[in-house]
Image (cartoon, rainbow, N blue to C red; front, top):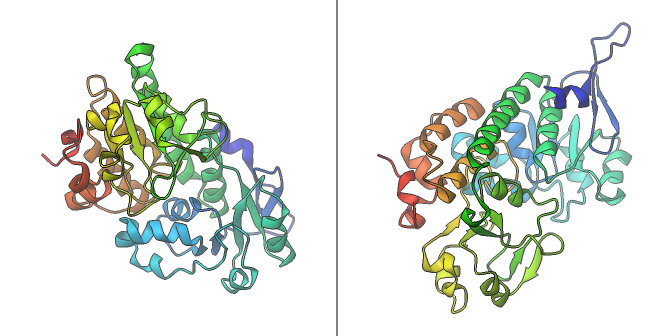
Length: 354
């Protein structure tokens, strides 16, 4: 694909096998003499991406503790139980590397954030480790870093296939939603945090806004300045969203957070039972990840069930077979989609097993 080819080139060195050369998101040239067999991931989303791009866990030697919590809480821990034993003490919560623990994993490649300052990168480089820096937040960047890590493992064709699926699903949804008029578009509020405080993000650089718009809806928090901004219940009441999406990062967060709140329960979303918790699959479906097309189909079916009729359960089974070589059970799907908690929400019956 054009995006992958723009980022990844191979150049021969005399007397050696062709090295792998990748231009990362800080435009650094990263060269590996051979496909990486040991990769540590400090950014949260990349651990499960590495697993998907490789089709297993053998190359992932370290990860962020929040990435591990997604594995433990979600279905990936069932598919790959050994992933629960992969070290997750290689970084502090603020993404600053724990160099001693990181070096102990003996990584051939360390994935770290780009554009977030030298404190995150210099300790890795100064320890003599090879760093690949990725940036986050758009669909284009997601496809790029998936191509980077697949290429680093010597499997560029995996990213080409998975990114091709992304493009195909996005194009299909865009074609079906292009004629939805402005007054037919539900106003959707995604809450990045909702337990101890309420946060929302503006549209700029916001992946949630990307897929909300893709499926023929609009973001209620579009005009918020910045990302993860604290908001009040009164602000949400003023927006009065048609739909509220709860994040899947807060394990204890349920629909009662909205439905039992004296202010939030009066919103149109609550009154019409259109409060939904984002699914938790191989990774959380809210941010960009290898399963994102399933997020788009899930949300499209909920926003416009008259236009979109994806057989989500069938699509999930196909995707998990491709991504993880795993046959999802109906029980697995019910858990990913939180059928037990929100099966009675508006239009959610479509996702139940027939």
